[in-house]
Length: 457
Image (cartoon, rainbow, N blue to C red; front, top):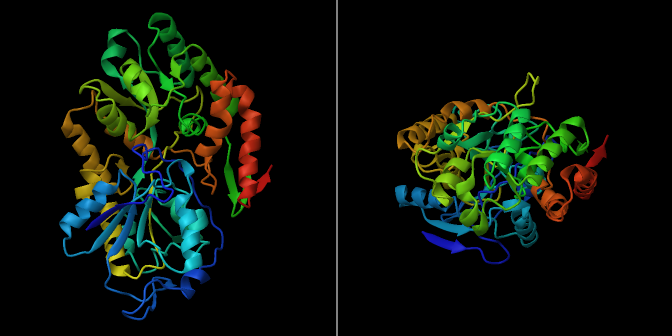
């Protein structure tokens, strides 16, 4: 096994868990580029297999690209499969929409060499360009049995599906829940809010009665995925293969923006990144509530913050009063892609299947809620057995897994990058989120048009 760090422009980051969530919706992309070219030379002649024409197959090492968090997965596979030759390369995982993978694939397509066999991405929108570029192989055309593919949670692989063909596999689900400090809530006589109105009211009460304590964070680029997505703000509704509607000033958007403004103003919602050293040092022990994805429990509270056992609990995300259809947001849930240029299709497919389904990794080691259903059950059982949480987090997480609002699209552009470039600087300068909603709309529309989308309404 060889482990390499990709240094030519990639940012290997401990914050690679910050995964933006995007989806490619069906376009009739042509895979001619994948069919016409191959990687490697010698070995057996490539044949038509799995809905595409294989490259000539060789006995060389399997090249796998992972981010720093998924490095443990590749290393565990190598340990359990010592006869498989592997080159494991770490890169930024396309964190925060860096587009590193797309840039490198474009280069490899020009030079006709260099493609990795399997890649992990923190993004859910890679199929929106990778299929068109001829990079990613179709998986449900014979490579992976349907009996295996049916094991994913309902709709988990929707971001990977283009016109009925599956081009990647979802690693984990990142549905949002309400994390909270159970002993403090009990000590101060607070009830866990079930509505956003109650959440805002409790934030006002905390500001007055326990200044310095927090009910949330608005300091990260995935803030819209936690709050605006959960609140059914139609900021990027993909309506066709290359069409989108952008509405950031609807009632759903403005009332959630107003909630953020209220709590940022009274300092119960921080503008510091939850991944920053400043937050870890000065605010991590001041969290009363923190809406966030499933992986916050292990990655942040248990891992980064070192919050003692018996404090952290999970509850369902608040909902607007009178809304009969509960919805939540989603922050990440990366994907695995198999290269259509791979000269090692069989070992690549074996690795791809193992890394997304195996209990040894997904159920027992992975930091996030597995997208593969049986592994998710093992993962939840291990969370319960750890006795780390103050309550049984299984119920809230399982329920939220089926409540991710479908109106938030998975376009090719990065909503994290847009928010970070447009809204966060304005908030830092003292502007309200409500006042920034028109600028956010303009920025989304500009990014979408640059990627070839027709923008409506």
